[in-house]
Length: 256
Image (tube, rainbow, N blue to C red):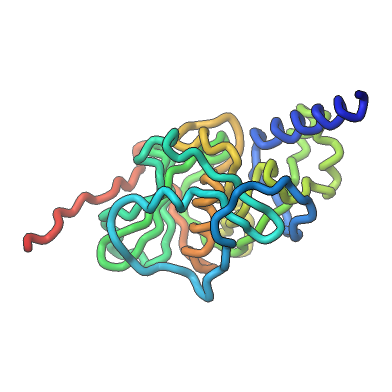
């Protein structure tokens, strides 16, 4: 009975950790946990190079949010019908004049992230924005991309949450389905300086489209996997706050 209770408490603790901030991280390690199997779609296969080309307009197929095997982990399906359609991954008309394909634009006020494509389109993702996500605006470059990263809670968070002490002293939380960084993390630098600003996954799909209490810029795990493949290393990232928003440019389709 005691063993069963301890197992239950551990599960509750891991679920609570997924709601915490996720902006302080270090070098990733491969997954070492083995979550229970879930029904899955085809296994994830990384593309040979970043995907920055265009394609059909509109939302992706709902199957894009199905369960998927991803290395040592099996991402559960997202009940995507419960997510506002505007926050689902979709290709839109977008005025990215002067931006290289692969440029990322984070519009925190509208809870959107765009990846600029050629010929006036962009892939758009819904995001959740944490307190740290509102703390910085400007331009940076992606200097690191990690599969299933470890999470290192900052000292001030550990001071507030003593239960996080096992993850302190550079030990970190192992990768896993309840890790606050999710399946992928992209790290923003200005020159050689880490901005501590992250684009990362989250198991909390219900937080997309919302402003949340902690973390940086979060995407649904299936979306961060797609973003990871779509954005090249050293890509430019533009983070806009408040009134400094770059709204998508609705271009009329040419008359046939």
